[in-house]
Image (cartoon, rainbow, N blue to C red; front, side, top):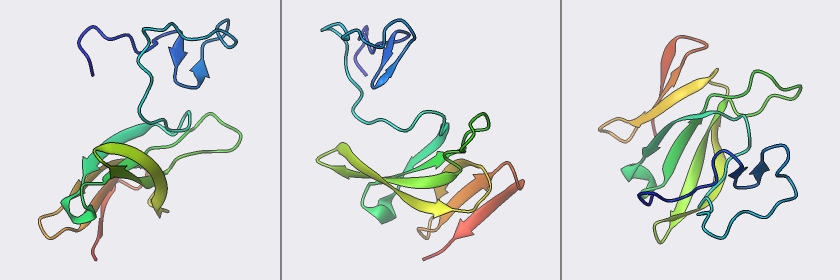
Length: 123
């Protein structure tokens, strides 16, 4: 983040446009996002894992107000040269993930507020 930087809020947000601005071009001073997630996946927790070479796992809590739900998974965001380049599903079926952490042994801990549990995934 750049102090005083304009990231588009509330009129522009990457590919997302506020009604009335959908056909407008973002101002030249807008700093574009370096990575975007699908709307309504509700990214809540992020952790950069030593055991994954510095890639991040992101807890997508998921939508509640869509006809076709999205999120409710953990995704791995791969980095190259310090910049995010892709995201792939790492884990599904753990309710509604809230956060992810790395245990000292490299295991992945996922908190789930739908099941009221912390899931442990070991290598």
